[in-house]
Length: 432
Image 1 (cartoon, rainbow, N blue to C red):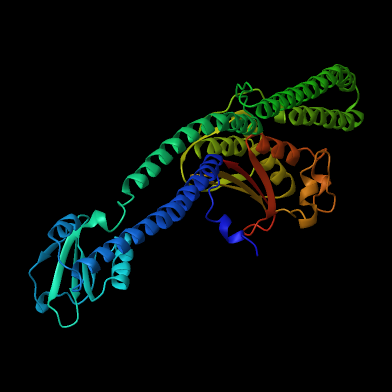
Image 2: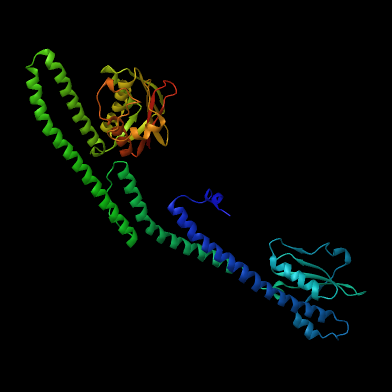
């Protein structure tokens, strides 16, 4: 037997599950106490008291016993006038009076000539008794003589003190869970490219996990910084000889100069691509509230003014999203440049919902085969069968840079086939 169906009804949050773990034992304990103690104890006491009152009724109505006014007064029975027309059709009690069931059952079993019983409140019991051919007798006595006091006070105390202790335990448990929540928030923010101040607190295990997270974050930031510095140093060292080469080549004849200048330009573009890739996750700019789709419209307009055949064809939803604008602009421009390089037209669409932002770039180029899309997102991968390399040089960093920037925003870059244009469809999806 599996309990997969039960998962749909369980809380998903840590606080909800902790509260459930806390409440279930308390509720189960109260139910056990109520059933075992209240039912069995009070039912047993009620049955004994009802049996005793039945003996007293039998003794009072016994025709063979000589009537003794002193004994009758001690038994405290009230004999009321009645007739056969006044006898109820059935035993009467309130629906929630469970001890009344035991009283009526016991009286019916042990009272000779028992006809009906009437329990209308917590104070009085009426019993109709018919002894043979004798007159119908209506006996009235106090309810407390036939049954134990209703366990209302015990139940109220159980509920009140159980709720009080549950609240106290939940407050303590919340203080223990808060450090875990803070750690999760800091880790999530770091995954989105934000640096949230965090100091370990709470239990020893939570503190240990917090210190491990801080060490991991420091190592990752140090690695990114070292990679950026290394590539920046390499680019700086290469720019000087490239400048000298450009000056030397400029003095050559046109036939010899133009091929060499193209090679120098290609080398310059390679260096710039390396630097863009290094800055993908090392961008220190803080996320800021960005108006969508105005931001995407500005990027598309800038690309269009530079001669790129691109246009914004659809915008759904409007609002503000926390973005690092320079990094996101670089990702969109890379995807648009990629579409221009391998296609003749490019279309951009934006869909903004309450939960996510999706920026889609489509082209009419050859696209990328399904089994090669994952490889296309890795750095320095060039897909010769899917992309025409003759249209420009590259080192396979355009999609990798866009994917890194999407991950830095807590999102993802998805590749697919454009249904409307037939080429590549690239979606940047960022959770709000």
